[in-house]
Length: 350
Image 1 (cartoon, rainbow, N blue to C red):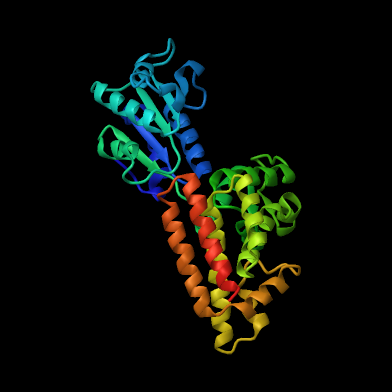
Image 2 (tube, rainbow, N blue to C red; image 1 turned 180 degrees about the vertical axis):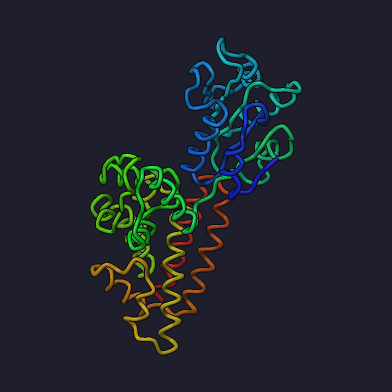
């Protein structure tokens, strides 16, 4: 069986050990989201104060040539506790074979939960098909977050720490963050650490734009800005270096494409306004957060290079690349993103 990406959190919130499936596959291009989802599953199934013997982690390499190991491990119950979670990292052919063996060997009731943590999987992937087709299994996809989802996650994390956030700070923070849940949560942890631990009994504290600037600086958004501006200005070498920096930092291809798409959507809007008579400075106010004074000349140059029609074509390329990345392995997704950025950068040179 399977659920849609936006239903994953709700499904986990309702998960009970007695009614849990025998196997849950968590997969997708959002590596941070996959990891966080597995963590949530562990806490939902075992509770937060579980006995360490109730949790076993296996790497995909451990299953090579041992298809029955997963079933054996799931059947071996701990001395204390009546539930157990077996966590498998990886989704190669050996994992697929072990999952098939495990599902075929299952009794009516399974006291253990097997969780598979995998990268992105195509619909035709054997592991994904097995989880989606079997009534005793569940497939949970994790895709890159949209802007509205990022905002919801920011508020959720900050509220847990007894903080609220100003609208301007929200705009600034949303623009700075990647679309990977893991990266978002690490950056929010830095922000909360900067603000300080707040007693739940106190009135909620406020996060301002100055707090975001001071805590996070411009490192995350700076790399995105360098990539986007290099692509939009046709500077191929600079774009390659910026993309390499983002990849080295663990940013997903889908995340980079999503940020580029949001930039070109705003650029398309600004150009459309100018083509109907709006002054350039007023059209540039469409960018949120407002353009930094150091970056503004670069975007003004993009206004000269691009037209709304060319922007529309760039958006088609970015949307097609994002769609392709959702069904591709990490390496292929990076190649799809690099090709999209190359095509757009060459268009900027014409």
